[in-house]
Image (cartoon, rainbow, N blue to C red; front, side, top):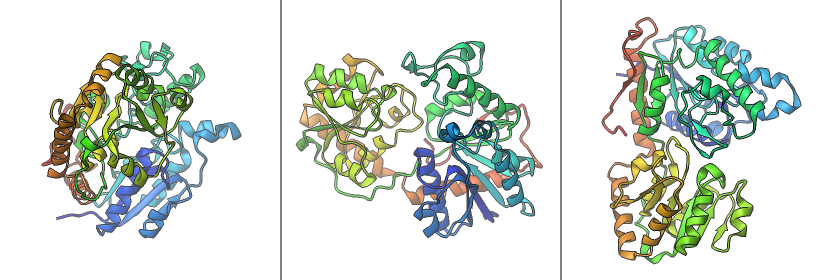
Length: 429
């Protein structure tokens, strides 16, 4: 029996601004739809229509985000530690029962900092944090060396990490990120103050587990894939190979362009980004620009195969599951978390990240209509055997909240020597 009285969803933005915001808003609306009393706590409004229409209690701090730092140096200080967010969260929680309230942290690096989580923990409330990225350990949030364009194997905040110029923008940004990481640890006591985490993939669990506090628990939970059932796409009849996402180096765009030319297979890029001119100049490629979610699904319905050639880890890779839901097989890189949801030789291809030869070989195999159809059918069947839809997601999320409240109260913490436990649920990743 549940003893929850309120779930407080914490996120930088009260509208969709990136993947973490999308998940935070989707979860808040779904929880409210299931009869849960939800408060949405954020720094940057306005609130999107979905939150307003769901009747969710809103706390909008009306604060600037880090991108506004050029307008005021105070924003840089707020980005290190958001004292205002700490104060407002503490005020909201006073008088509430820690045994009946869960604080769920999503995005915090653009404005909030871990301050709301620290306020909740200081008052004895249980905090759950979804690991949308790697900022809980890595200063640049990706364990990726943007200068070398490859995953970073350095220990976070080690001497090798500190001296490395791995930041996408430059040394000054790296220094700021290092200072922010120290503020996160020393002032925010993060991630130490949080003992319950949600991981979107086994890959992110493996990478972050060594950096999370001893005695903490990691709950696997897939993102919501909110695609209604429909007949499987006839992929063998579709000529188009599609890639969906930001057109940037770490997404493997250059590798895909080279492999496309080598294989003689044209690519339709659904997205936009810094490498758009490179795509536009390629005779074997085209780009649509950013499309709405509905339009993206329409593109998948016209696809023969999805290509996801990311050079970095990712934490989930949503579009690979969306493609499977339509019966479209995927070619994914081996470093990406999305590779966990592709079975080579059955539901798609797993290629060596950054290898033009490996990707070109997979692209050539997409000319085999029978193979593509068989992979697409298997991907479709695997997805719909246990779809990560809204109903399943809410059910599993509520189970996590109840587990947290029932077994990890602030007055009965797990022993410091307990290590990090991955909690395997019935439909765990």
